[in-house]
Amino acid sequence: MAEYEVNPAAVAHVRDLIDKRQYVLESDWGDVQPDADAQNAYLERHSWDDYAAWHLGVTKGANDETKARYAFVAGDLRRVHRSALIACVYRAAEWRHKKVELAAHDLLQHLDAVSGHAT
Image (cartoon, rainbow, N blue to C red; front, side, top):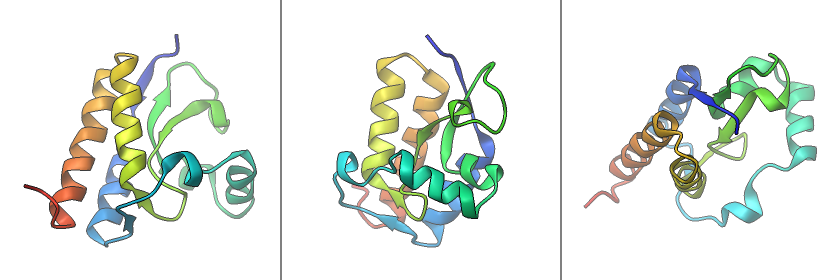
């Protein structure tokens, strides 16, 4: 099983987008998550650092500047999706990637607070 480290640059990027209200609160992540074509199109117009900033996890041992290096995408490469953060929490918890799980959970809580949905 792959091992992941938290990507601090992505955590900061996602938090900044949330603070700027660049998020979607209701979406079906299965329908809106970026597929391979969307990722390739993004990489044609952006740097690998920009691409990495959307991924909360970095795969240990994977080569830089490869899609295999980045995991746990937090949005559609334009806006953060609440459903993406939930998927990150769930998937990281399922496979016991505790640090990524907690980073995604903290971002989800921040999104709920900023959007006025924290109770």
